[in-house]
Length: 387
Image 1 (cartoon, rainbow, N blue to C red):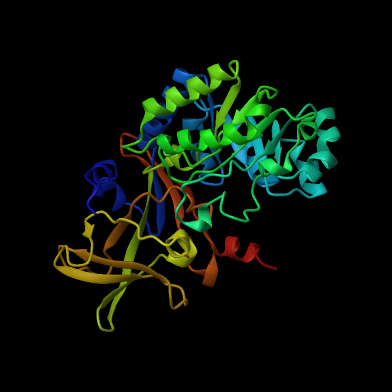
Image 2 (cartoon, one colour):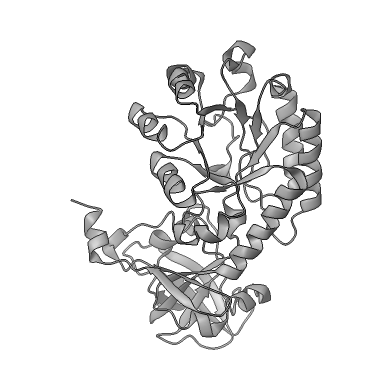
């Protein structure tokens, strides 16, 4: 479980300086990721958007927005955040919209993508009047996502219009097609998805102004095949007369760019050593339980790999608030800080204030090691979520 690159990106003198719990983001890693994405844009002419559902830390937007073309949002709140803090293109998709949603979105959005023909027909004239680009999400009928919780093309999926439900007359007034069929995957998967997408929807593509390849592209991962991605995009655009093309990764922008620093509050024993931390899988990193998966920790190994083994538990009352079993070279001590890796994505956006436990602060540090705490949460934040 050792990750030397992340240990280098998050040195102990930085992580040990913050009050816990704390989400700590590296400007250096963000810049590195954005540079990779910008390279893809320059090679292909594609436009890359930040998916706010994965990373909405607007205090970091100044680092990102000079290189990417905008954001994609899933709600009026995300769209407004993108408009106010990012200031470029705002694209929106949701499984369905209320009238109040649409009335808010027309104030902030450049593209709105519909998930059904009924909603398209209901709102099309209004969007045309407001000069907002209209898209339809389609289901390409193929994906390789193993975890069904994250599979947009699973049987019976509510996401995307199946090919058999779409006729040419339905596309009157539609500017583009959108599909999303990936999750943390490489470009070879995209190439295979495109074969199904073109087979099912190719007859419509020439009539479109743009196509959106959705998210799930792990472009900044060390083993990602960027050359194949560029080749795939360039061939697609050439085939369809230079059609405008969008990608909207969430994870790739902030992959490995943040950690969650937590402290050991106590150590108890019940058949094994159990360290109770001032953080929580349930409240602060819910995908650990939902997916499930076990996050990596700087200096820790799998059970049996190092000498001292511990189960790491959260501080909420939930019996299953357990992060996982780990091993360490030295015995853990009360007050010791642990650093959970890759905690910038799908964490801050999904946290809760369950039990009213202390919420992680949000901090960022630059190449010179200067840490800035952007937000601390207090009782007032907890109270104001309720009434």
